[in-house]
Image (cartoon, rainbow, N blue to C red; front, side, top):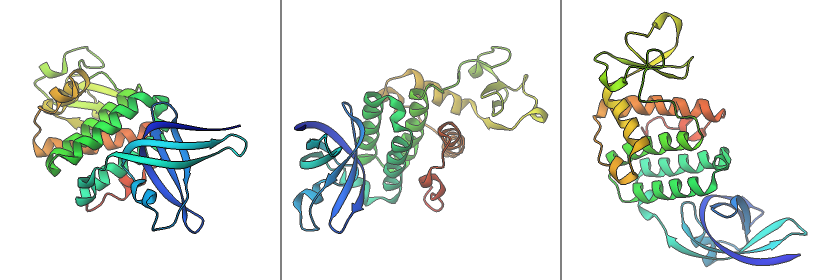
Length: 252
């Protein structure tokens, strides 16, 4: 049985298939992550439209006997051209794509669809400095969709509000949670040391709307600290090597 259908989709990646054809990996709310074959050589107009990070209306022909999907048309709604004009933005988009693919969007296709499209839309129109903070929000929200966000409100041991702590705040790798200075014993654990500003930022991303969270400022030193912390967490929680993070030297 074969059938034609249409849906909205985001292009995650494109790779060669034979001499002139390509296999395209898409993300959609309805079908999740799936592959489809794009036939046609370099002069094909459709080939120019079906490019990474393009979002639009996709028409496909599904051959259930051959277990294959063919792309018949693609109407681009958003090209995100600004992403290709900046190395850091390109890296961010590549990271987003790799993370979504390797985690199968956490099985939460509609939520990741909204998050990924919002992230790409945001970095397209943002400055590079704004993109660096958007990258942090994206990872923390992704961890939340994975169901692995730890409590940012209270100390894991004594329950004291972390934002009330006058001392340092630590993330215990062993216990996978935040600990105040009074409860922390560095001899027993590997840890990240974080500032109150970093904790407030994570709380804001968790509790506020995306628009409200974007208004939370960060000092450059806190941005660097959170980048190291959150990339460590996402690597740990996915359980796989993310090539974009390994290749980030000189970009970040």
